Length: 230
Image (cartoon, rainbow, N blue to C red; front, side, top):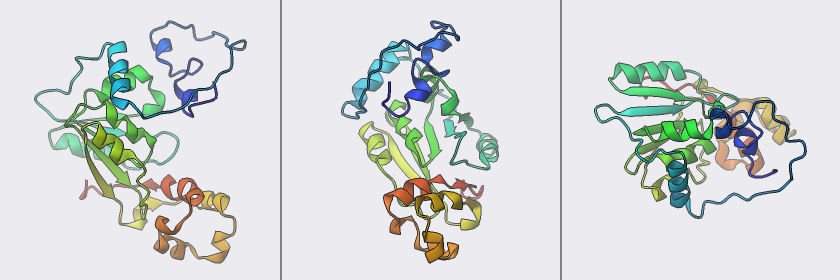
C-alpha cells in the first residue's frame, strides 16, 4: 500500500498497527507476497469516520474525567520538538489539572483514539497531528502552537471547528527560544543564504516564503514555550 502517507506508521506491517496490540498478527509475520494497492485520503465525512472508529474499538463510552480537566500535549519524536515539554507538563499538574504527553508516532491507532477521547484540551505544535482534534468530544479545546513567524495554519482550525471543537492558538514571539534548522533551508533553496543573511530571513518571516521553504524550513523549528506564557 503506497497511500496515504502515514500508512508506514499505522498499516498492517507497522509496529503501531492496532492488530499487533491485540496480538492478532504475530510480530514475525511476512507480508512479502501481499498484493499492492493504493488508497486516497479524504476529509469528506469526518464525523462518520470518527463514529465508525470509536464504535469499532469499543470506545463509545470513553469520556474525560468529571472532576478535573485533562490536558494532552502532543510529543513529537522525530522533528518539531517542544524542547521543554516536561516542564510544561509539570507546570500544568502544579495548577491542579491532569496532563499527559502523547507520543502519537509511537502509539497504535487504538491507543491514540482511547487517549484522545479522555481529553478536555489537546495542545500541539503546528503539524498534522492536530487533525486528531476530531476525536475529541464536542465542546473540547484544541490549541495550536505556532513556531516563530509562521503564519501557515493550514486546515487545523476548520477541521476542529467542523467537529464542534473550540480552536485556540499561541505563537512564539521570541526567536531566541526557537531552534532553526538552516540545513533544511539550504535543501529547500540552496541560494537563499547566499542572497540574504539569517537575520534578514527571520525578519521577513514565513509569510514571504514559497511552499517548499515553508514546509521544509519554517514549520520544522524546535521551540521552547515560555512558562510565563504557558
